[in-house]
Image (cartoon, rainbow over all chains, first blue to last red; front, side):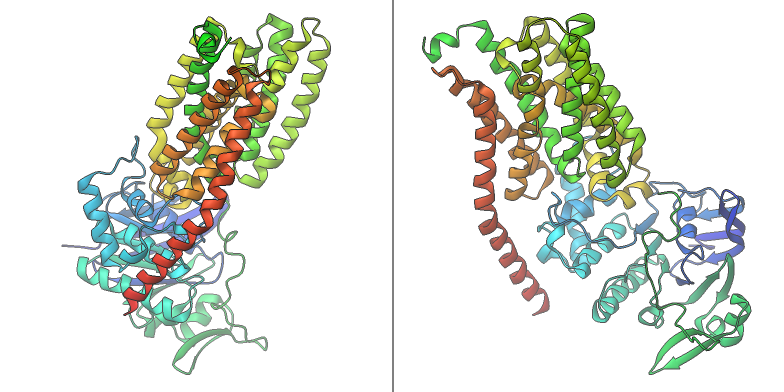
Length: 275
Length: 285
């Protein structure tokens, strides 16, 4: 492996006249895990959309897994923002996993040995053998998320893009899911972009932090970026980074002292003007 | 005349062929209708095929052609007006109300046999002409080939739209294609059970089958089987010496299967949950 798997140069992204990301430059090396942080509407999901080939940048260049972003790329795995599946949805875990690899192809999904084998392997790799044959709607959030990971890892992607994979999980499941993603990026030397509001469960695993505020970015190791000075500069307003019981909190510096990352209301409307 | 005498007659043979074809296409689209939460769209498309049929009657004395053209127009309208379920439902409601009003007006301009009008609403499987049977064979083939072609991406787009979009599946286009296939299917089904009772073939068998299985292809298979037994069974019962129209038996059989599936569903679900609990226990232990 040589060179970064994601290479962004002076990237400008926006919808119409609204600029969401301004002149972002970033290199992501194989095997690197990067936390993408920032308040609601700061461009995190938009960045993933560019990398997935769903949104063309206004200017600048993007390269992912050696080429321009394109949909249906086998080199890019994607875990979308978590939504619970309907209880009655006529699909089992294993079909959901398989669709991640073959879902864009035309035809009838007759069982094929080669596909079934790799689906089984992916399911086993996330420890989901026990419930892969149950309807997905009956599974817990953590179980659904494990299947999501199996689905994303099925094509052995060079890059894994995760959009809030810890949402709606309890702290224990958050640790499990994070450890699982970490294990696979090590085994497959895959780069991981991890969009999240929950910084603490993933902090032990990340190499770098990309912190986005109003289209501006701070990039570096967690120690470099998650400091009162750096974030105050980034927000353009007093911000304090405090440590409470081993957990990092980013709070606004005025008297309201609210947690700037911890809240996550109304995520279905966040950064989604295309819906 | 007994059942075997009737089966020698073209009208009965036509009815069984038409019923079989319609049952198959309804059974295939049903699970997708449920996964995409489009029961109201089926109802809307069916009732609006009444307007199209009325227009066909008035203009060219051909209700089927009118219903077909009307339903495709309506499917396009619904597809363009609303993509998200909530938006779509209100769009259907609006188009449905306007269309039915138009249908009543058109029917008031029609001075032919009154039965032609009730046939539209309640179906007349025993009046399938050679021409409409041929048309049905063609349309059923188109629907089946199309569904076989888009089955996998449509399933993907229906159960997992976010990821499907990221994987390059044209979810919006698939939605509109499915709506058109649905409208054609519903219009054909309306000839058997009538526009008012189309749901008994396009929803009920799939709803029943969903209580019994979760693997998509298995759900489709059971749904087609139930639709087949209900339709052909209903026609045969009606032929064996009753004066009750087959619609009644088709809807009754279909509903009966649904009730049985509801009864079998809880024990099945319990077994599934038990197995799941055991598997979870093993995963921890």
